[in-house]
Length: 154
Figure 1 (cartoon, rainbow, N blue to C red):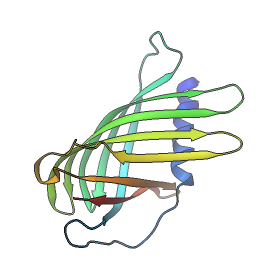
Figure 2 (cartoon, rainbow, N blue to C red):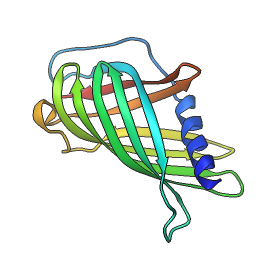
Figure 3 (cartoon, rainbow, N blue to C red):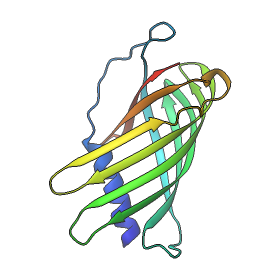
Figure 4 (cartoon, helix red, strand yellow):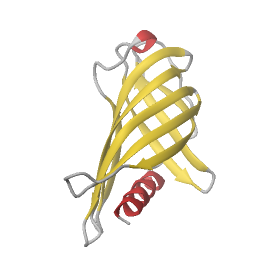
């Protein structure tokens, strides 16, 4: 039950983010944008010692970003309805045609009063053509699935 609640929390947070439909690609050193969709599979893991939900994240990115993301997520929900999650995701693939890898850090919080979802690139984690990448991703979930907008500098 805890795992289901944790997964529902993540999907709820993902559905609350705003989304822009403009794709912006500019010259080096400027903010660029990549958009598309992704499929995600969350695999619940056994609760060890800590009373938190833990899942493996397995994503396939489509659109301006093509590749896979694999990671781990931990989450906690209180009896009062406040919830939090953190995840680390390793991306491997291409961003607007540039190949490499980087790490995404996910942070989410939900209470009766407020909510927050942040997905950011871990500084210094880029490799290949993506060395030096920085930026953040907005995730939206609706009836058609998950979409993203990734604003980044390279």
